[in-house]
Length: 236
Figure 1 (cartoon, rainbow, N blue to C red):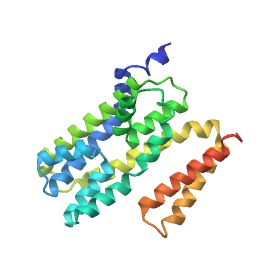
Figure 2: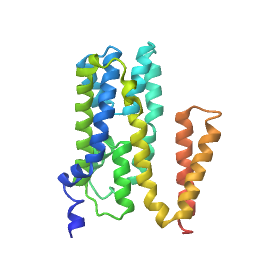
Figure 3: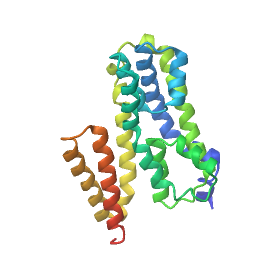
């Protein structure tokens, strides 16, 4: 009964988000520093973190603004980079199908790589989750990200080179940590299937990155991995 209660309430979702929040403090701060460095005002940093809410997307926007790229290029690039969110949302849509459309819109709107990692890990462990728990997870991460961006913007003028402190690697490090947490349990339970999926994703990435952009290669590799996982699921 204790395990069930831990995954039911809004507060439980916020507790599950604590590791993500700690990571967002560093990543969001770095994003705010970079955003301030390319000339964005605090209001613009606030709106960027509220409306875009994507670490990779915001860093890319700053890079493109720095080279005075046209708005069409910025929009298309950010769309391609973040199009993986379609796949992430689709992979959990059946679980939240019984809930209202408003609940599903709220979950999908604030779903990130990190909250998706926490969610899928809980699902793999057969946790009885609720939308209240998911909203707590998503909203806690969202507010932390916005706060960290603003803080970085306020203090950015005192940190001219965030790379010296390793802040530029924070997003990559956090993603790798979440990836390890996600594959640990499947490797213990379904070693053969998990290895097949990982191998198919890696091989697809290597091949497609020779001929296409990294964003397209990631999307294709994800689709191939999903296909392999679906085909091999019944064989385990």
